[in-house]
Amino acid sequence: MKTLNEYLRERFGCKVYKIALDGGFTCPNRDGTKGTGGCIFCSAGGSGEFAADRNKDITGQIEEAKTRVSAKMKNITNGKYIAYFQAYTGTYAPVERLNKLYTEAIKHPDVVAVSIATRPDCLPDDVLDLLESINRIKPVWIELGLQTIHERTAEYIRRGYPLSIYDKAVKDLKLRGIEVIVHVILGIPGETVKDMTDTVDYVVRSGADGIKLQLLHILKGTDLAEEYAAGRITVLSEDEYMNVLKACVSHIPDNVVIHRLTGDGDKRLLIAPQWSGNKKHVLNRITKMLDTGQLT
View 1 (spheres, one colour):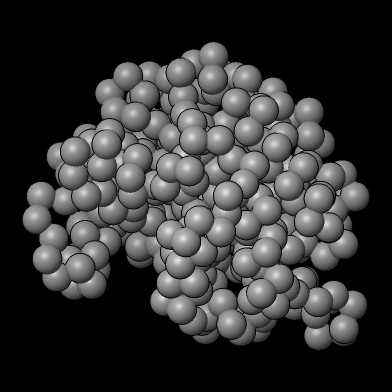
View 2 (cartoon, one colour):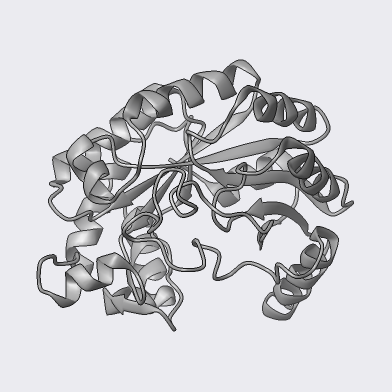
């Protein structure tokens, strides 16, 4: 398996940090185009709780994020950054506005690539053309929120598009030479381990360059939190998650970069699973599982 840190060092020759930005977007699953409540698990911040201040321009957000990283990683020398448009749907705006945001990010001297989180149904031709042009300057990664291939659970989480839309998005992006990273949620209510590994298998076969495996979190203010409070759903225990993760990683070939193996929700919003809030412990356990060869 190839981890993100290994891949970034090989590709860029230095330590690379990913910094979350907020482009001031919304989502078609929130503004009434597809729905108004968002996906059932999505927080009010559109998964952008760790992003920089959206009231600042992109350059200001990058500098703010660099300061935070420097304070946390006190021994940074010659580090570079990936500008990550994380909050809400990062291609859901007029192409002229997108061009301004992406260009400002890509031209920053410390930014080596731009990564954009979006929905497969928010990639019209003019946006794809823009992404292709930006990709000629510095690498552009598109992160697609697939979550699952199973229509019954896609409907439950209110994803709002069929699997065929994902297939088209990957094909369109790959034809333009744009790298694709796919988000998969592990632990969606009603899914078995096989359901989850089937999703991973599908992502790999679809041509994805990278994959993010994300533990399902129950966050305050979401419709999923109401389901949990009513006792209609449960979450994975730590041991269950490790077993699921082990099964999923064993299905990922070395040519697909693993960008995430868990995920950490904002502790101010996290309801469950509480064990996931101890990020250091969880990452240490995953690392031990990988280092001891328990995945083979």
